[in-house]
Length: 407
Image (cartoon, rainbow, N blue to C red; front, side, top):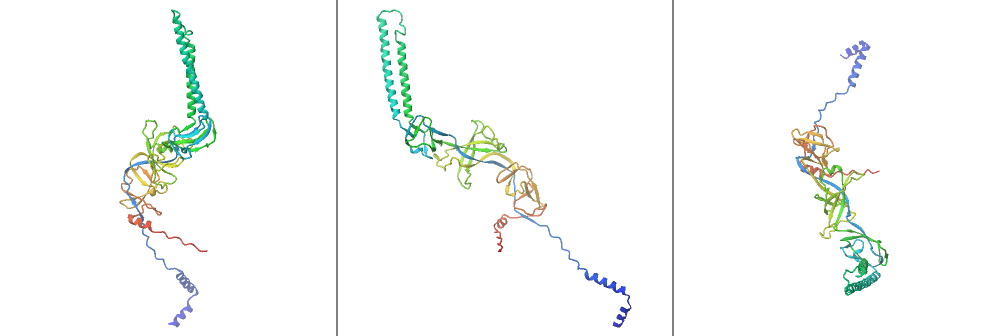
């Protein structure tokens, strides 16, 4: 058999060997066909959901301002003199009550003026009494002489009598003025207040109108609260003095974690909009800001505060947590029947730091709101709803800290 095969090979034409070799090369060079993988199942989106019902929503307008005194005045001297005494209530930051004596001036010259005015008044009264006696005597003399007609004013010395009466009035006025100037050497508090700054010291000479210091009233303080045009539509602010005030709750803007709050009332609004911001300023009044009567924690003049003003009630709206809104105006719904994801764009009618308020009837009748942060959100994706326990477990899992690469 082997000799026959060898003889056949010798007798075969050369081109046959070329065909066989090419066929073998093609067979050997072909790779085995790859096994086709079945298509991957669609990915399931896992998310927590919330059922959003229709409800009424109380609007709260947030604003901020700075506490300021409603009545701040500069105390001045009404008479000239040298400061002889400064009362303890007239120190920087001290409280005082109405009519308290804050500063005393040297009153020696004013006492002398009072004595001189009293002497002048006594002389004027004596002269007036003498002239009255002369007028009576002149009338008796006229009657004794037997004149039948009425005596004229000159006979009765009426001009002299009027002159002496005028002198008495003038002397009385001079005495009253001297007494007022003496009283003004004691500078009294015009109201219940607090000293902002004292500007004089003992031994300093002051003149009429010299500034002694600044103070402000403590019965109430005020806050200017800016309100935008959009927010004005949601508030009913007082325009007239007879309009009811609007309550506002104030908090410390410097330390927002502080639990202390103060209640104020918006009693009026300014008549014009701010030229730059086009906002309207509402004036809120804080009674007893320093806690002198209530004993509450005091407010400070110049302290920044945030204000929360209750506005209108929006009826039958959806309240969407801000954390569930993506890309400014996008939310994801989970359809209850299909359990699929649906992307929606919302147009809020109101928003604050925590919520978006929309009025879109029927949006959540057949859908939940997806509240988890979703990084993979294809349309119509299947959804698996996470239970609250599962959400808590996943949020409590600590993230692995990346290791530092040593160089």
